[in-house]
Image 1 (cartoon, rainbow, N blue to C red):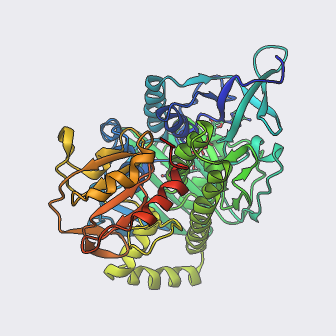
Image 2 (cartoon, rainbow, N blue to C red):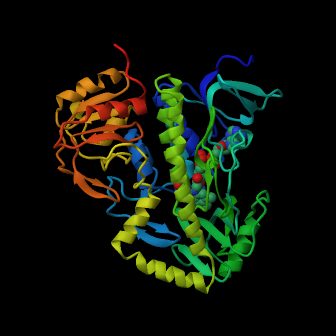
Amino acid sequence: MADTGWDTDVVVAGAGPTGLMLACELRLAGVDVTLVDRLAQRTGESRAGGMHCRTLEVLDQRGVLDRFLAAGDLTPVGHFSGLMLDFDGLESRHPLPLMILQSAVERLLEEWAEELGVRVRWSSEVAGVRQDDDGVSAELRTAEAAPALLRARYLVGCDGGRSTVRRLSGIAFPGTPATMTALIGDVELPDLPEDYIWARRCATGDYSAISFEPGWYRVITSDYDRVADRDEPATFEQLRRSLIRLAGTDYGMRNPRWISRFGDAARQADRYRAGRVLLAGDAAHIHFPAGGQGLNTGVQDAVNLGWKLASVVRGRAPESLLDSYHAERHPVGERVLQNTRAQAALTRPGAQTDALRDVFGSLLVFDDVNRQLRDMLTALDVRYPVDGGHPLAGRRVPDAGLKAPDGVTRVHELLHAARPVLLDLRGSTTLGTAVAGWADRVDLVEARCEDGHWAVPSRGEIPAPAAVLVRPDGHVAWAADGDRTPDTTALRTALTTWFGPARQR
Ligand SMILES: Cc1cc2nc3c(=O)[nH]c(=O)nc-3n(C[C@H](O)[C@H](O)[C@H](O)COP(=O)(O)OP(=O)(O)OC[C@H]3O[C@@H](n4cnc5c(N)ncnc54)[C@H](O)[C@@H]3O)c2cc1C
């Protein structure tokens, strides 16, 4: 294949949760996307066991949340390093974590991707990357003898913690190495005398046994007296011996579905973009899987990147828009690394950590402490550095109740098509004129809002705005209050910044 012209607009490497979500976002915006994965088929393994509120919201923003709710169970609690947090009362329509296996999340995302027309090429491993001014070529190792070349405008590495795309693009991955080893496996435990065991601490580590399906337990053992070689295979026998070491018994462990290993290494790509190559999900950040944040952060990376990349590919916004992806998502990833390092420190065995856990645990009864931690773990408090003094600027728009055309009853429903929305809640005559040059890209919706106040996580209640410009990812690009004439100059600046220059009539 000649190395000119594009086979596809965007190649997404890796059909895990991040790559699947990104492919869906790109297709919704009309971009031609090719999703490749080195696996011949899915393994059925399920590292993640849950999704948090903000991820449920972004699925709701696209109108597909019900599929996920039907495949999992809502639970009233979450945790910080095994210490229970109360999630009821989060300022969201979906406050409770959803217990759902990663395999189910991947299956449902893949079904949605297929409906949207995403092509997935299995047995296709990205083994080479070369970029130039016009595009990027991904060399694919496939079942065929000769490698295939796929030419695209952009390549996004969603290829996990050991990302080949990251390495081949020369993006550094600094951080801290593992200091412990954990084993995880889905097994039967016929002799377990309790319903479940949660983060039971002992002299050299801790262990859990949680039932995700009748008859099956997810066993996790953490050993702090050794760091395993990354490439050493994890075996059933290792998990069994580790459980005996920690618990004194294997509870009759048998019939493993899968066994894997993880640690507390914490690393983050120093750049999320190198020219025409971008990174998202575990390819951009790895950390101790405490508090259930990795899959959630990856899906939210994808939702931040998807509409920006689509705008650039479709020639509607300048390439510089892609730099806002790093500017917005790198700090979010950095904070996840920090809070998971803190959680890892709180799990270490020993009398001093026991005492620290007691003190820390006693603080969680205070509402403000509980709220601070749960807003952080759920990412509901994320605020991007968006210009404008309004308290909503940069935050995710609350899902307030509406009376809008076409029977729309709440704000997040307006985002199903993944298009920007200028929501006019006071029938301002000036907004229609101001947005006219963007009418091909931005939907102007006039609606009535019954709620006088909007609840904003980590901020409290604020008066409902008169108008709000919402990006496709659900974050606020501009907002105006009711008691002033909307500042249409600032609105036009925001429209240009996020959605490109106005179209000349
Ligand atoms: C024990 C444990 C529990 C966890 N629990 C949670 C939880 O409750 N909640 C949560 O949010 N997160 C959790 N996580 C983290 C979560 O599993 C990961 O963050 C998530 O899988 C990341 O998704 P991803 O799509 O970015 O990467 P991955 O899931 O790693 O997917 C990467 C894909 O890329 C493919 N690939 C790799 N190399 C190439 C290549 N060169 N070319 C083409 N394809 C390639 C792989 O085959 C794979 O399909 C947990 C992790 C662990 C270990």
